[in-house]
Image (cartoon, rainbow, N blue to C red; front, side, top):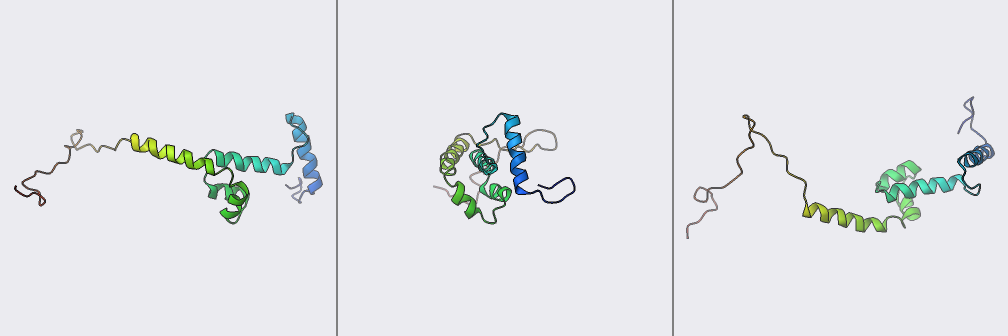
Length: 122
C-alpha cells in the first residue's frame, strides 16, 4: 500500500486500516491480514483454480511452495477430476457437424467393403 503521495505505507498503519475494515464489516478483530490471504488461496484451490494460477497470484516463484502450504486442499480434487472424466466418458460432448454447401449435414462416412484396401474375400 502507498500513501496518497505515493510513498510506502508504514506496516503499523496498514494493520490499523485493516482493523478498521474488520470493524466496519462486523468481522472479529482477531483476524489477521495473512488469514485473508490464506482464505483467498484456499477458496481458489477448492474451486478448481489451477495451482499455477494460485501460485502466481500469491507471488510464489515456484508452485512447490504453494503445494507445500496448501497441499491439504488438493487431494479432494482427485475425486472431482475422476468424476468429471467419468461424466465425459458417459456423455461426451456432441461432435460438431459440418454442413455441406446446400446446408444439409454430410453423409455419414462409410467404407464400401469391396473397394476398401482392407477388404478380403472369404
